[in-house]
Length: 150
Image 1: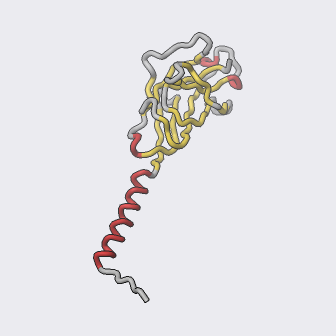
Image 2: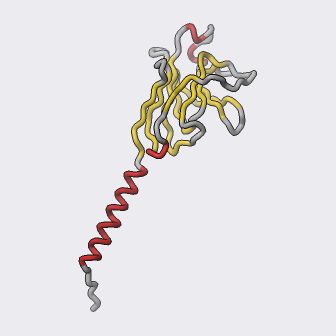
């Protein structure tokens, strides 16, 4: 019968692989993220890998326009821009009655600028009229705005 002999250095190698495995799991584990625009209207929350760095939301200086898209209010840049997240996060934009320009809240959606198609895309959205906020789940970081469904 064959007996395997385990030497002290074997235990060291096994321990080293276990430590490296645990480190690899924690290095890629997602972090809870929350970011809010300076005006408090846009919030981003969810989980993202550490490698994405710090998330920021700023009003965009200039934004692409499309003739068939009605944007209500400012456009916000969510950075790091144009990176695809491995799991969805939530983007929310609040609105006021003045922002609606006569549109009913049920017609609101969140939209993002799709760099690949050079068009605004609607994100499946939920409107909470009680808190005057529109929510969307996304994996896309880009320009975001409150829009009216066509």
